[in-house]
Amino acid sequence: MSPKCPVPPLQDITLSLVGRQLIHALSRVTSDEDVALPFAMVSSYYEIMGATNDIFQDLLNLLLSSEYLEPSIRYLSMKLLLKENVKSLATGIFPCPYYRKVLELITEQGRHLTALNLKGVWVKDEHLPLFYQLIKNLTNLTSLNIPYMANDEVLKYIGEHNKVLKLLDVSGETDITEIGIDAMLTGNPQLTQSLTVVNIGMYGEENIDHTDVALLIRRLPNLTNLGSYSFVGKSIYYIYNNDCPPGFKTKLQYMHDARTNLRTMKAIVALCPMLETIYLEEPDQGVLQLIKDLSYINKIKLNKFQCHELHQLLDKIGYKIITLMLSASLGSFNFTRIAETCANLESLEFYQIQTATHEEEVPFNKLEHIEIIHGNLSTSCLKYLMTASPKLKKLIIGDEILLDDNDLSRMLRRYRFEHLEAIWFPNAPRLTCDAVEMLIECCPKLRSLGELSGWRFTPDEMMLMRAIYVSTNTDIVLSPLGIFQQGS
Image 1 (cartoon, one colour):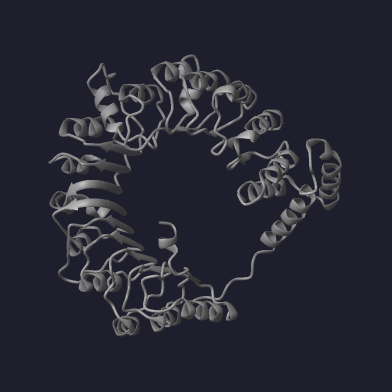
Image 2: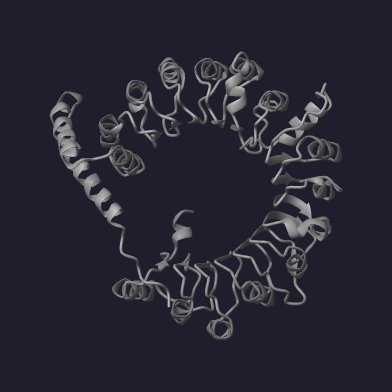
């Protein structure tokens, strides 16, 4: 039987109650001039009740992440709660008229912040001078997220005023060139040592030249991740062939590259020995085989690849792989062969399998997550994946499911799905309310039955089931009928 809903922690209940009280108090403020008295009353109340800085941080996170709240309430919450020992701030989305006020507030009250995420406050043009002042004041930042707003001047200001950044997110459509990267890093040896993650560029677009990104790789000796940039291999190849320092190696742990050829892959192997995750889109023939020379690889993500090449690679290194994320395969993908070669596989995600096969029912002893969309799965192949994965926690199949209630009943009687927490079959026209009841009754950890619009029952039956499980305090989520269609 699915578990019962747990009693909410006292901390969560209390935080929600205090948050509602604060929202009620701030909702009475009609202008900036009216704010003094409510602020004084609330601050006095918190002081009397012994509120700690942790509570201010938790309250701030709760209210700023509640996008249904009026921007004025979220802004006033920030103004009230952004105190000296609040270390992390994510503003959330604000409308344009609030940009100036938010930037001025953070500049004045956020000097002690170590993490700032301005996603949702799109600083451009006339607001840039305010942002420069903010950067100048917030010298303790170790994490700064400013997607879609960076340019060379912004990078220059970061380099002049920050020496401890570890994560910098300047991704998205930006005006960054070698000039800005050089200005940020020149004369700032502490920053070059501390930066380990830089999110830059846009997925699939070389909106920042690979030679400019190569400068980042050359100048940041502890860089582990260039998130959101799809041509890292191209940058590595440029370094490899342009006065590469003797013995130069990167510390990159994640690599994303598109249209990788053999020369680029050889450069990656030579300069990136610490790679743990590699994402290759449309690699040339022979490229996949060179992945075997990367000693620490345990996650592989591929797009537009040949299945036989992947199988050949996994025959050699499959025992190291814990995650496979695959899309747009060409050829025949053999699940049995994957089970044989990838004994430690924990997660398998697949989008668009050209042909899927299986033979003997070799178990996936450690597989916990299966997600397959457009997989051309036969019913026997689906049954194999379900019954040969004893530790399965989450199962998402986007294809039409031809199992009926009797098929499911036989599987549930024979196999123990004791770890299954979520199962999503959005298109299962032969499954009925009885299948829902069987899954909830037989799977002791099941908490989510996802999109059910493709099952064989009516909205009224869904409402009745939901009412029954609410009344019995069963911890199960039955997604509304038509949830995907509503978003289309």
